[in-house]
Image (tube, rainbow, N blue to C red):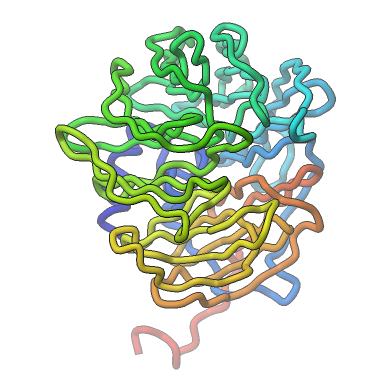
Length: 423
């Protein structure tokens, strides 16, 4: 796995700021749920990890992104979609940028942004719930450019508004826009001015965020749209492979695609299930589809040692389990039944699991068995936003409160001579 992460580091440093301690986009520096060079405590106090600071927030499910001493919060306050830069140590605001929004949820009452902010080369890119795509200066919050993608590309509202975080590949901002009437399911924008560079796909948007891979000497942008899993050439928008994925009707694709070598995994609930495909130099092929192993409503599984660890089930109906399985053989290594729905990330060979019931869980990242190290009731409300981890600080939020939790002791206990590795 470490070799795999090294390869990802090489790839994703072309698309994001990957220094240790940064969490510049959805699912961390590599979009894999893995943190870079973090060291965490192996146990928590009985009361849970200390709260370094907390503050109120507006509506929305967008998790934070972090670069150096700035945490970028994207939420809705009144009729304004608001981007704020916060000092990671104190929570004090450094700047604020607002944009009017009149979106009202129909299928779901949430009216705030869902997509995680993206930080790249001193810029912040946000994709609002009603399709407002904008670029801000990271130091000042000044607006550099913006596009009303729903108006320009004739995009419908969808079930929950916009929920896909854009990605940067080869100096282009690639966005799951969903403008099928304009052949603009996926659109590439220039980073500096926001100009349209190309558009492709006659499909609606999903709530899945794209990833990228460097295979066979070239970059691929991997998207899950409303009804397809596709590989796109980031240079020109040419479709390099395409598989049916998803169903019509009241269904969504929410989990991000996961790359393991030249294989890709996708998962969804609503009778869709898991998909495992192989990307060769000349083509791509389906290896298997299966609803029984992992059908996750929106949680992206984590690759660990060539296996996948994630949630099988839904938040709203039935039960959910946490499982570890081998996508090559479809064999389940272990399963924690009735675990409950959750999102998760990995750091220091530990799983940090944020359950939607507000419980935070720490467990070993293991291929053999589930071993819990600690848990704490962080919120007493439904918690959907993805956590962000930076320099031992975990940023978690529900729809009312943002908390900065300390997962690494500021003054760790000294190692006793008897336990010293040098003895």
